[in-house]
Length: 534
Image 1 (cartoon, rainbow, N blue to C red):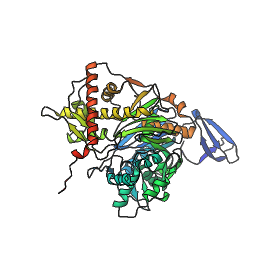
Image 2 (image 1 turned 135 degrees about the vertical axis):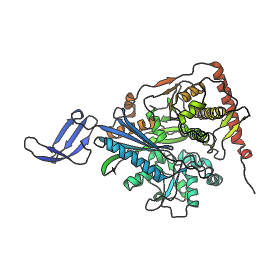
Image 3 (image 1 turned 30 degrees about the horizontal axis):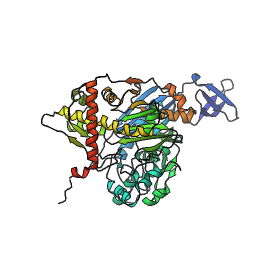
Image 4 (image 1 turned 90 degrees about the vertical axis):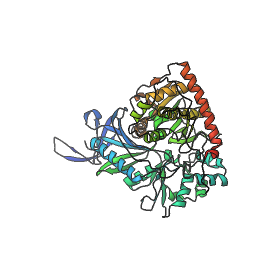
């Protein structure tokens, strides 16, 4: 049965044809006829199937996973796109290339599942921004979370205003990864007249619908949105010289809209952000599950029904939807750093790179330390001026030693922000759930288990974000709570360390050394920063 706004029912006895409107519930299809009569059909009697496609617009690429109402994975596909870094501190992407990738993914899904009751739930990375003109044409590339070109403007904001003003009103630390500094940079450097500042999700939805729309979750990651009032913060908008006309309109993530793919009408759900939906897809709907992600970047998050203010101003507070928040900290140094090393060592395949350069656990180890702040730092120091740093290099060190130092540093960095975030979580019993492309590798989880303890993960899903998107979609369409949907998640598997005390002692000592070098670099970064004054 084609998904359409119009259905025609034929009375086999009289031959009468009636146009009907279809309304779909979890187990029943209801046809509304012109004479106000109703026909109910059990879903088992018809061929249509309700499906939820999580469209995840990420840093490395976009992917789409299609799941059923009981969270069974039916289809998955992904396409990568480029990350551009033309200058130090810059990290940007071509939004039109991303739109082409997303269009390809949508076309393939609609070709395969367009006859079903299909919902596309939108999800994207946090903190991305670009400038567009009045017709919606791009005036800049997409500036992503890893970009620190706005640090000069972040410094100006810090000099002219109390940094706590921004955190207290937005639950986002004052940092160049957020919109205030990026908007100031765009205003200064884009010569054409800017009509709006938008994220990649807003740009894609505009290209699909002609409307500028964003959701609570994505807006809450911008650094200009007041989550308590559920609106753009008036004081910060005034500081930046913005009006609401300069930004997309904010809706609930449960907002439903229509768009076309190959002239077929499709239902979209505005959705949320990648980190927020990763928590849902990992089964974290309250404080007793802390989710660790090691993907392009690293993050530690827990879910709460309560808005949380960090007295130290380091942990952010973002929406999942209008009922739940995630509280967490994130770093820039993870998969992007490992991928950089893979490329400069002339490897094309990350699995081959890892297999040929990483030793089996337990290993002897070495004294080489790496600080993975190549793109500046977010949590816990929020120092965008610091850069990557090897310490302890000697003539005896090999390629494998360099790779191991970078790999260990990602795990050490994740533990560092995990330990910092725990101070805000009062649960006595905490489960640690692992997500992310790098994080879900057996080698990384085993290494991390020596540093943090028992780790759980869901083996049936490559990307928890798409599962979380499906859960949000089911809640919107069928009215089923996240708690009731947890029963459909596969059982967790557990990774424990093998209790090799010598290896555990080595990792603990090296982690302490990592923290000391890290802290020294944050406090003395100017000593290590070259400035050509000639």
